[in-house]
Image 1 (cartoon, one colour):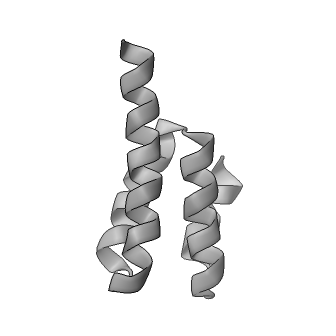
Image 2 (cartoon, rainbow, N blue to C red):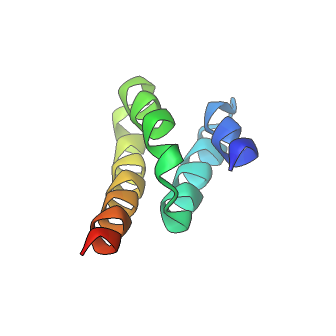
Length: 66
């Protein structure tokens, strides 16, 4: 997880978006704080993917609690 989370800070926006998407697919809650930080820093057009990743993680957490 840590190497993928570190990729959120890559210089290339495309790499950051793909890392965010991959973290959403993996669904590990440890990714939420870095994704939230990135969301606040990222340009608006990249925020949709980051938000979707956070939503996937939160949905996975909610499903585990049911």
